Length: 280
Ligand code: AMP
Ligand code: FE
Ligand code: FE
Ligand code: ZN
Image 1: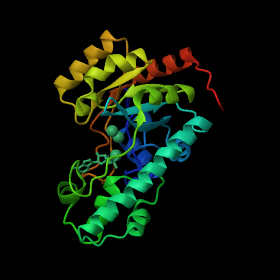
Image 2 (image 1 turned 45 degrees about the horizontal axis):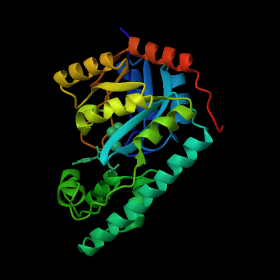
Image 3 (image 1 turned 120 degrees about the vertical axis):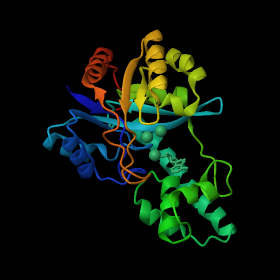
């Protein structure tokens, strides 16, 4: 049976794998298709397409956008994105700048707490345009200021902890529109993690195409629940491991194997839509 992993991160955001390493693992595990969904970035897609092609793996370009609706944070996956779409690049560029400024603020807070971390250290370690809290956590561990990533999050970086800084997010409705304008399909990521069930009908109304039913952190009961919701709202079904490499312990790739029939449905939907990307 053919299967896919449609939720993967590289070092172009907060994953630790390069596209080459990720495709290598995909090939070893026998994946027929993979999508790259770095946070607020499509930068790794070109290289990932190339290495997947060489490995005989079908590649789907994507991104994971951090969004919100009425103060509820949710993550939107965009698939089959035109990674050269100007509006997409401009908008995610703005959110990359937000992420970079947030790193500066978090480090300033750490310094106020007498934790002598330098912002240059974090940026050097992150080495990407879309840095996040995991990079601060890794820098804290590397500098010997925390023993583990967990400690870094627990003491400083988790929501409402002393070095946590809220992040300005794009509105979920704008996120769906942005993905559509870039020719993509908009999918709600890991709904079981974000308590976003009330938002589903709102996003469906806005044109949401799919929902991530299968995710490493979804229990079988959660997956079943979201499969029912997908059925009810006529949504496409996706799934992926959300692998961040060694960022959070063991690499997760291989934990979710989405049956390939769902990839076929996604491809049919995107070609049916043939959304004419605006502002190319
Ligand atoms: P950010 O986008 O900067 O807010 O960071 C979010 C990233 O941090 C996501 O990839 C999360 O999975 C990760 N993260 C959140 N909480 C923790 C935690 N307690 N331990 C490790 N990683 C975490
Ligand atoms: Fe992440
Ligand atoms: Fe996410
Ligand atoms: Zn993710």
